[in-house]
Length: 99
Image (cartoon, rainbow, N blue to C red; front, side, top):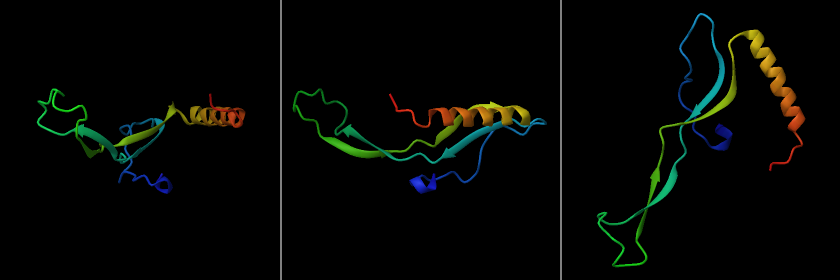
């Protein structure tokens, strides 16, 4: 993620500690700044004075983003099975073209 210019969070967050740990892959990162355009003025403009509203460019940043793998295993045996099936599906679709 750092190689892609994304700022990672300072600590890893996840489910609370349990006697039987839940094995879940989730990576959180600081959200990227997105630019938005808002109308300039007091908000009372009905669009009668001008057909071209003046826009203000501003930045918006959500608190964070997540990349989460859609799979979880409750046991180590389940994790091994999950990893094997995941690798098989990746191998089967490696040459597939996106629709």
